[in-house]
Length: 223
Image 1: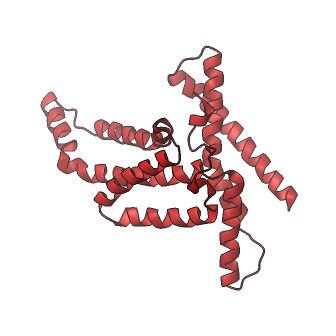
Image 2 (image 1 turned 90 degrees about the horizontal axis):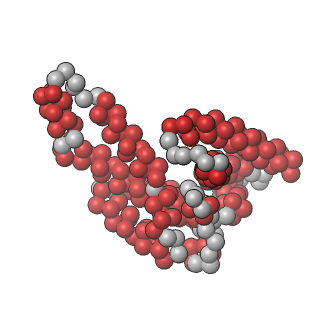
Image 3 (image 1 turned 135 degrees about the vertical axis):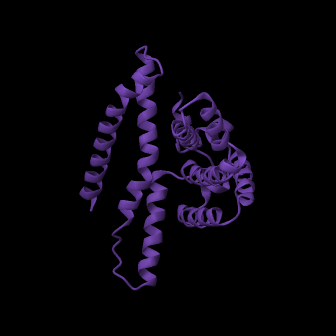
């Protein structure tokens, strides 16, 4: 898989969203996210369509948009698996009855509406990471904290910016490491399957922790 299609990977561009200051996007996304959670699902459906069109407008392909929505799909599959495991397996009739009850529209509609909201939320996060570099995110977080500290007459030295930046940067970093591991696995003749996850997940954990530690040490050294 090409690196440019990894989860939440930055995509170079010169669109208005790329040029928009990161601090504006960082303030806008939480506001939109809260609104999407509070408003009826129809707004989430409309927002998902609008955000997808916005993605195309800033040259984010359908494949890249779908890649960033994969966690929602995995969550949905996991939820369905748990619901299947919770069925009554005493007899064929009880299995059929419990399956019909568990997966009827009345039972699942709230879950479907929740996933519509989750899709829109993931699209917001995708647009942020796709159009903002790590440096821009760091500067944006610092600008927001500096503004808050000035307004509240607190000491001017930022205390939380680096921590929040590392948290935000950890998501695309994990995705990038995972794509590199999968490409290395495929290059050695490995196939997708349970064995791949058993072999690669411990390596992913070790490499991610090492990179996070090195990043933390580098930031502390620059202070």
